[in-house]
Amino acid sequence: MNVNYLIRNLIEAREVLGEKVFTKAAALIYFNHYIKQMIERRERLNRSKLQRQVNLSLREIGCEEVPYSFFRKLI
Image (cartoon, rainbow, N blue to C red; front, side, top):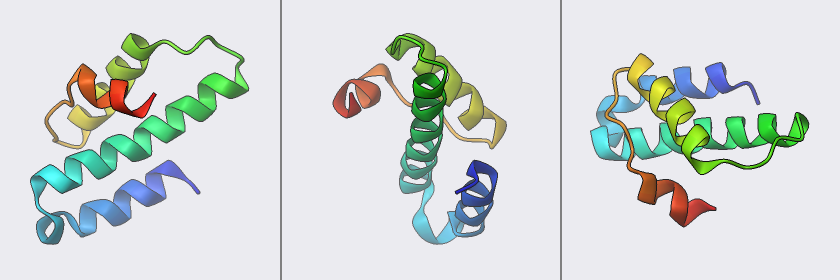
């Protein structure tokens, strides 16, 4: 699915979900998107780069950044 479509739908449910759940859900959507891009480009997985990209995307939609430990749990 298109990332922008998923994020738009998530933004519509932002008040119902609460800020914490919304941020984690958005981070997971962006995380999956950037992981797929890295695989397609055959890039080496770099958690720091991934964290920067996800946090930048989160800031663009007005969310707090997620800590590095969030990515360590997923990878």
